[in-house]
Image (spheres, rainbow, N blue to C red):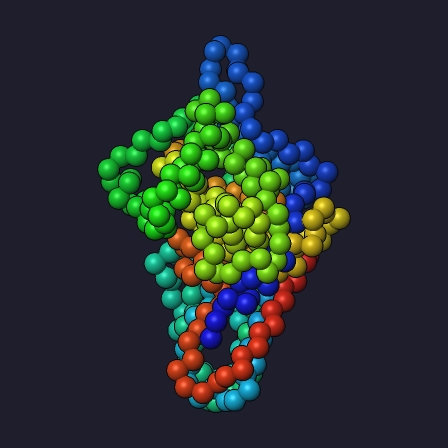
Length: 344
């Protein structure tokens, strides 16, 4: 069974720029403080007067349906559909309904995702997977903003044990050296223009991909490399996330792939990209932690409209639905749909 079609159709339809009530959004670096202190880095300062505490409750219904021309007699599946449950995001309700009886095993994978392994115990020609979650999402961290006194300068220096822990997220995918050099020069241009301020460089990089690259469903596959996306200047959110990840890694910044959802119930520009699963990048910044950048929309992901689900080094680590058919099947067809609604 391939997750390829859902990846392209689902994430390819995502990406509306989130907007929170009548809040004010500020990205970048504030003017110098009095007393000669370093500027304060502000990522996604968001005011949400219509949601006390900068929070809202969202309900997600994600359905995937596989149909086959001949019965599937033996298969194995992995589901990464359970939203993250942490101080920024409370999972109030969750259920996973499957149309075929079988053996389920719930576990936490190596990336910290809540996973379910599933082995059907009967033959089937249709497998319907329905995930429903009710989630309370808060604004950026505890105070709806990252307000860090100081600055993150390039190059970033990691202690040896920090680098060891982050190594899977620091290693870019294997590409020919000329391609990596070209991408490295592209990334370093943002650092130079930002005067060595790494956070500002990442924000500018995020905006550049959003403004200069064409969102075009069907123009890529899961095998498309970040360099091909860079050269062709087109793709879907999956491709833009992969490009942002490798650019950050070439700046010695740990980066990972994130799958989730965006609530676009409001009158948001670009809503054409909103009605399915979404993908973005997360980077690890010193004394800030993991922070998300959504290059498909040119935004940070600290808004109450983003629901985080699975993460990993790349798409294959975090695919919402994956599986292998060992016996039977054929003529596979896939339908996938996502609905996100504000319920509180």
